[in-house]
Length: 349
Ligand SMILES: *[C@@H]1O[C@H](CO)[C@@H](O)[C@H](O)[C@H]1NC(C)=O
Ligand SMILES: *[C@@H]1O[C@H](CO)[C@@H](O)[C@H](O)[C@H]1NC(C)=O
Ligand SMILES: *[C@@H]1O[C@H](CO)[C@@H](O)[C@H](O)[C@H]1NC(C)=O
Ligand SMILES: *[C@@H]1O[C@H](CO)[C@@H](O)[C@H](O)[C@H]1NC(C)=O
Ligand SMILES: *[C@@H]1O[C@H](CO)[C@@H](O)[C@H](O)[C@H]1NC(C)=O
Ligand SMILES: *[C@@H]1O[C@H](CO)[C@@H](O)[C@H](O)[C@H]1NC(C)=O
Ligand SMILES: *[C@@H]1O[C@H](CO)[C@@H](O)[C@H](O)[C@H]1NC(C)=O
Ligand SMILES: *[C@@H]1O[C@H](CO)[C@@H](O)[C@H](O)[C@H]1NC(C)=O
Image (cartoon, rainbow, N blue to C red):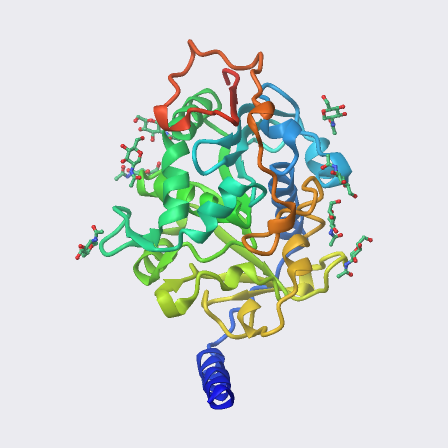
């Protein structure tokens, strides 16, 4: 009985993972040296969101311990918002101006705490007003909903002060899911945003994926990177109705190896079997390596539940930060973002 059950389970698994007979056509737009440079800079911005110095304060230049953002460190940057374990979901990240590259960057950190892990496992699809029949993961949706009022308000004030700066939204892992939802809302409001995500899980259903994918290019470019057998982009499963946005930028070079332009393939379909989805073997190390060690500022907890469970931090009340950058008269803090035990820091743009 047990044996026939396991054969059945194996057959089912194989069926669900089997490649379709006709492979989808690849769109092999070559990656230029300039593209590669931009990809690497935004990967570093995502890496910077793991470094507490950038998220527990505002009014600071972006710096990373463990050398995970060397190019960003050469730019003239300044944070105007830092979120650290904010709200019930523990949203963490920053909004910064980058005057060297004429851009405003919103970056979200991936899973690094118990609050984040609880956000990750809440993958029931909840209705979304983004589009007709749109549904998104309940956990990601509540996390973004908790932070959106504050983030949107400060982003708006920053863009008003720097009208010629492009808006970039980026993030790794859970941070990629939050970046996707933030981008979706901005584009829905007719704000043009370029998005760069690294190892993002699936965020919503096919209506959401199709809507996001079909938005006009004038609303910004979407780069969703996956790396080798990174397991995170394979969750939550298509079996329960999830679908990736398109395209996928698949990085085929191994962990710890410098990524060259030729290692990146643009796959037209977000659910192509030629990219990350081809892998049965899952290597958590592939989640941590994009254009460099993207989680270098994390102490090894930067994996979603249950992979990083042993290392997750509780962020007890001892980590409350009251920052001189925070001026409560400048901004009204939404009640959902009561930072205890995390922190919210702002500086006028
Ligand atoms: C981060 O902040 C700590 C404490 O303020 C400081 O010692 C450290 O040098 C900072 N790291 C970077 C890369 O700026
Ligand atoms: C979600 O939307 C569908 C179709 O519009 C509707 O049938 C369903 O009741 C909604 N679910 C919730 C939880 O609102
Ligand atoms: C989103 O947040 C607002 C408060 O900012 C709250 O009233 C609303 O219920 C939340 N919506 C969801 C779907 O969680
Ligand atoms: C800022 O708010 C104004 C007024 O609501 C809106 O028209 C504009 O698109 C917003 N800009 C951004 C960048 O959110
Ligand atoms: C959206 O923004 C573009 C460029 O900023 C503008 O030309 C267009 O009229 C806007 N559309 C709407 C519906 O607001
Ligand atoms: C990558 O390099 C780090 C540090 O040198 C090492 O600890 C790790 O095992 C390497 N990972 C892989 C998959 O080669
Ligand atoms: C990345 O850095 C973290 C923290 O130093 C380390 O635990 C991890 O092994 C590194 N990963 C790789 C692939 O080098
Ligand atoms: C840098 O990496 C080490 C492990 O190599 C890790 O213990 C340490 O926490 C990292 N530093 C920061 C600031 O995250």
